[in-house]
Length: 503
Ligand code: BGC
Image 1: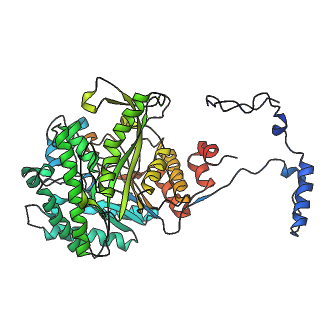
Image 2: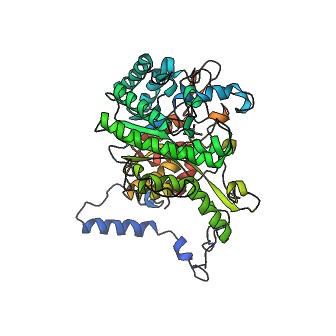
Image 3: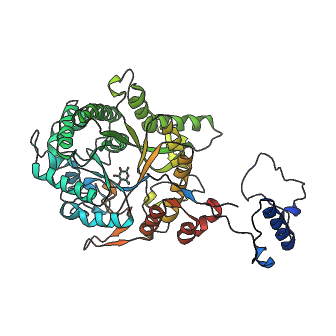
């Protein structure tokens, strides 16, 4: 019999098995002896010995069958955003941006999107059928306040109808007030570069909560200030498309101040409201952990993208690159924190990249990549982010997590491995309250247009029909079991058995 081998490719500091004779570990216990031992053991515990088990049946040991349960009140949802699904949001900056050539991949446009303004309810039915008990959706500022200070009661009534539709299906809504889009009039007045936008946002937030608070008490003020700032003002691939790092930081600061002001305003209208913000976190690891420069580069990138916003919100302090000094207005303005996690990058020091603070992003050589160069398949990242957020002492929602995967060959594994990592976090008592998968139906993916498909359901652009991908049923089964079970693993991703159920 062959000697025990180390898992190939894994570097251990030393080989603890070297020169040891481990053959005995491979030898199967003789079936007869095992049966005799079992009978003896059960006699000790005064249980009757199993009677009808033929001795030969004992020969192959049972496969491990652990089940990973989630708390009984765990929230299982999907997440969406107004502009990505509603259609015909003609009065916002993204619509205008889409009309100009070269801005959206393959010339894509949101157009009627997933037709939610007409009939979100058809997808609510799908969500209910999957067994979801939660949904994160956003309201569109440009519909609700089409002109400064003028609120559209019909638009608010439509949102109220949607929220009631969710409640009627026993789905708890989480409403985001700002998910990347701005009314054109706001942009004309300087958008988020203008400090007055803080007050405008607060006025809008108040009106929304007054109108919809009867059906919702879980609010997400702003989605991903870091992504908004970086793509619009550093990268320049999103509106307003004016790369300027200083402005990017100003814009993020204004967004955080607007979050804080809205926090108090919403609590004034609805004292029991639960208010948070969705923060995009990306794992940024050094390309070469042995290199001091790479380690520093990764740390800088992490501070800039992940940490500065968290420090501002929880400690009430601006740190670089957001600035210096006190941000005391931000303190105590989170009832919960939202994690949007998708992927990781490696970061290398690069002296030619002054614009990106001498950092360059790359992928691990052996990494499995996601479609459309979206990043690495890196499930452990969600655990690492949750561990970091646990230190804030706030309830945590995973407000987004998902994968672009049109042919569905990665999504089942993505879902199972990420949920398994999240389960681990729950077992360590990190206060993870719920998970919102991004997303239910393929939607308009901003500058990527319709080229990235994140849906549990695929969408036909021609006739807007939906077809469930295999992961829709997978998610339904997980929710129904409120657990990851061996049966689910075997049915949807048997190749994960050894990883998730070692033994
Ligand atoms: C955004 C979503 C987007 C998703 C997938 C998130 O960062 O909040 O609007 O669709 O990523 O790209």
